[in-house]
Image 1 (tube, helix red, strand yellow):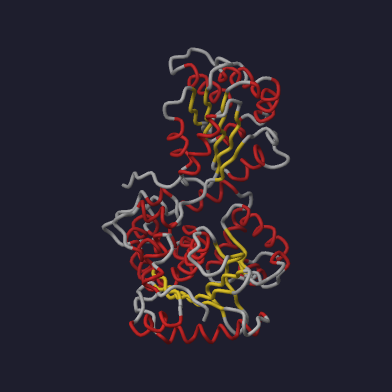
Image 2 (cartoon, rainbow, N blue to C red):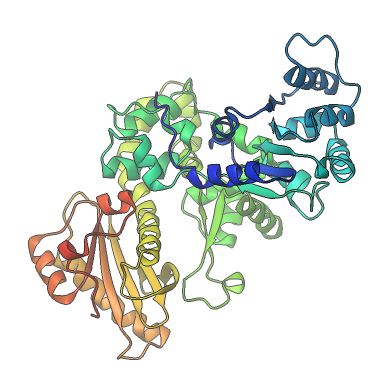
Length: 477
C-alpha cells in the first residue's frame, strides 16, 4: 500500500486562504469517488476547531443524531430537533473561527430534501455574519452541482469558493510510484488514471499488467465492478450509457457510429454523450485548427477517464470469460493489446508536456492552442499553434528508438499541413519527436543540426521542460 500524499498544494492553499479570511466562508469541494477529497479535507481540518462529519445512506433522523454527536461528542444523549437548530449550533461562539465539514453531502441532501434551502435561509439570516467556515463535500457530481453549484442550486450565490478535485497529474502519479520507471508510469496513467485510491493499491514490484489482473480482471478484485458503482450513482439510465461507452471503447468515435453500435437513437445518444462530457467521463476532440469547434462536424468522442477506458476495453467485453475463471485468456489479450492501448495516452501526455513547456518559456513560440490535427489523408499527434508559427510533433510508443524514418514522415506531413491550412511558405514550422525509447544516434545528430525538439518519456513524466542543450533546442525548420 502507498500512503503518500502528493500534489494538492494549490487546493490546500485555497482552503487555507479561506480559513484565514475574517468573514464566513461557504466552500464546495466535489469530484469523482476515490479522487482524494476526504484526504484533502482531513489534512486541511487538522488542528482547527470545529467538526468533521460524514453523512451516510440512512434515515434523516439517524443523520441528525449522528450530526449532533459530531458537534457535541459521542456521549450526547439527544439529537437536534431540526437542521436549522443543528447548523446554528455548529456556529458556536459567533466571534470564534470554527470549521464545519460535511462530507458526502449528497447523502444528507437525499435524506433531507429541503436541507439546502434551510442552510440557504440560515446563511442569509445569521451565518453570513458569523466566523463559521462551512465545507460541503461530495462525490455525486450531478447532485453537488444541482444542490450547491449550478444557477438553480439552493446555495447559488452563497458559496464563496469551490474546488472540483481532479485526478493527479502525471508527475503526481510518478511521485506516488517511485518504484516505477517512466514507461510504467505512462501505462499506469493510461489504465488507472491519476486516482490516488487506485494508485495506493498497486504493488510496485509487479508490472501494471500484473496489478490490473489482480485488481480488475479477477472477479474478486477490488476494482472489478468499480465502474458499475461509479456510473450507477450518477446516471438514471445506466444501460444506455454503458452501451455508448462500450461502443467508444471498441473503436467507434463518431456520433453516428457510436449510436449505431450501441443500439441507441442518434438524438438521445447525443444527449447521453453530453452528460458523460459534463461528468468528465467522455471528451469530444476536434482538429485544433477548427475555428468553431462546437459546430465542427469532425468531432471524435473518446473516453477521457483512464480506468473507465481500460475497463470498457478489457473487462466489460469479457465478463462471461472472467466469470468462469478464464482470467489468463483475458490477461493474454491485455498483454498483446496494452501497447496499442497506451499509445494514444502517450500522445495526450505529450500535448500536456508541450503546454507546460510553453508556459515555462522553453519553446520558441508563445502558444495559443495545443491539440491534434487530422484530415482524411493524415494525422499529426501534436500541433501547437502560436501567434507566429506552428510546432508539429510525432509520438512513438515503441520499444525501439525513433529513427530518421519517423522524422522524414513528419516532414512530409508538415508540407501537407501547410497546404491544408493555407500557411505561407515563409511561416515557421518547428518539429518535435516524442519517444518511449529514445532516439537513434543519426537522428540525434540531424535533430541537433535542424533544431528538432526531442522529448523522452522521462521528460514527459517529469513534467518539466526538456534539456534543450542535450536536444539541440527547438529551431525554425
